[in-house]
Image 1 (cartoon, rainbow, N blue to C red):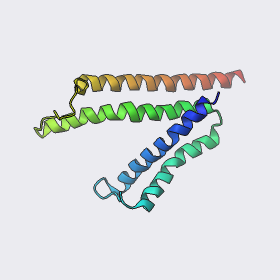
Image 2 (image 1 turned 135 degrees about the horizontal axis):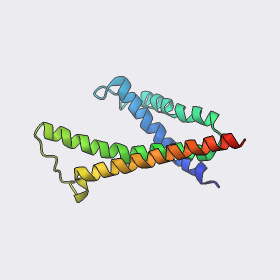
Image 3 (image 1 turned 90 degrees about the horizontal axis):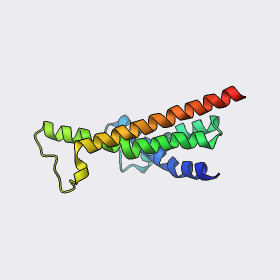
Length: 142
């Protein structure tokens, strides 16, 4: 089916741009990152797409690519936001600032963030383990 190809196509820019931004801030530091310099930003985004392109050169099975691209999506949509929520609340409490904002909802509780984080980690482990088992099973059959 064409689903893995379209799924990878949709996730590729998300992975590249996110990784490029992370690399740029790690290189320059978050305070001095040149966010308005389009040449540097583009260079780091191009650098961010290299791991996916190199991986695609060695893996021709789109199911495997879709599994690992889906892992990055789970990481960026579930794990990272929940960890940001947990640690930002801790940081605010540490400096004795109320973490309650105008955007507070019943889902802003710590236990909800921990539940999302734990569920995402379990899903990611399941996908990695099942992918490794499927790959090792295919190698033993041939």
